[in-house]
Image (tube, rainbow, N blue to C red):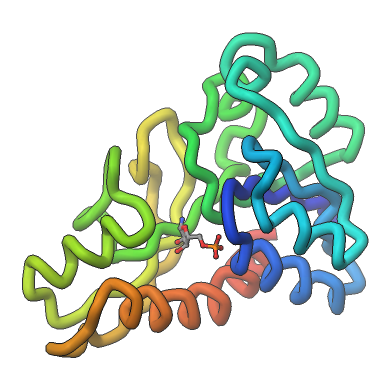
Length: 187
Ligand code: GRF
């Protein structure tokens, strides 16, 4: 039996897909959603499903981590899942959860990753490079952006007339299909 905490900064469609998947699971549960943005729609989605949430700021993540660590420990969190989390995870949390933090990236790493490569920036770069396929990468989290070992990749075609929006929609479908079940496999 494992407890999952999700970190999300924005819309939270992946967070919700994971929450829904584990609502049906008798063993593993999403116990907490954490966000660095008070207005993140992900927080609303968590509330809609009765999932507790916690909002933190930059200082709590990087300088004064005791409160954040206490929140994770009081919820007996076993696995941290990043789902559209826009900050670099801090060293104390990485050390505490070594090999137990995963992220999803909306492209086929190692291509189109690193600092500044998030959201539509990724899809625009894929289209500008005339790639004929893109996809998703689920990977372990280290102190650098999009750098940890790959756990899983899935591919999808890039159409000639794709826009960042149409490609993002195709990638989101892939993410919602695979991220929850890969998390379950990891547990
Ligand atoms: C996803 O495309 C994910 O790959 C990336 O950020 C996006 C978050 O989307 N890390 P959402 O907030 O889950 O809708």
